[in-house]
Length: 170
Image (cartoon, rainbow, N blue to C red; front, side, top):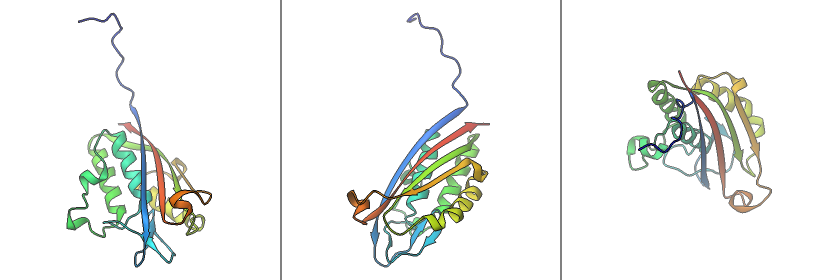
């Protein structure tokens, strides 16, 4: 049946994705962000190393590719993922995309935390991201901010992270 509309052009070679993650603080855990251990009296609770930044980024990449979230590929019901370095998960996501002919164009990331202070660690986090994404650092936006004492982040109960990505077909 024809609706009288012209046939759409081929889809663009670019795709965008958005990711969000949050983890609560817990005693006896390390605080890992972007693969960097951040000195903190409490760490983040999760099945893996609970790297909230890399989880948000992985979800954004998977979403841009039209794939399920990281919980689908790395479920917390599988013991082999307990305590795993989230950089391993991110590299696996990047490989899954590459096998589909999809590559990272750029990323823009925000970490939201009252404590610990993130700014002193941003350069090392960005270095890790550049290596794991196989992407020049000039294509990585990375910021840290507070929640101005509002909500669970403001009460220092946890950390949130957001990621926006652009991927492209080769």
